[in-house]
Image (cartoon, rainbow, N blue to C red; front, side, top):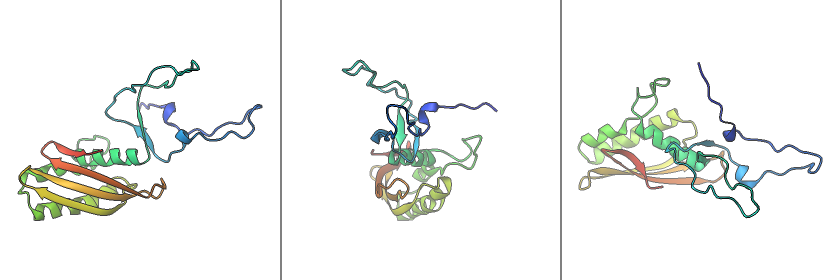
Length: 172
């Protein structure tokens, strides 16, 4: 099986040299989780800095820590089990709830599905609080999460989004 290695996404430990025996880690290099932004938009700042060095030398944007977890959550909600060939159980298929009556019973089913299955899909997802409210006038559900990210050390992460016939979209 073929493999792709992206060296730009590896966490690198600074190496000491003759001029700097104790190199420090730059703040932007401190992260726990890192992934590719799946929208595959190119970074916009490709200009050169004042000293002539390139500000950015990569094409793809990356997501770190809480943004990476948010993207993982979006992917879980948007994926229907069976869509990923190598992991056919991945995904929650929440969009099918939009074709059922929008009421508190369906909202409860959505909440239970998320609470039980999302942490099984990605171990980083630690749901502390979840609210699912149906809005029959707009034909959607408003979903609000509070996640804990103990590995990242940022405390709580609030994510708000809507679930409609187009799928799940976050407000971030």
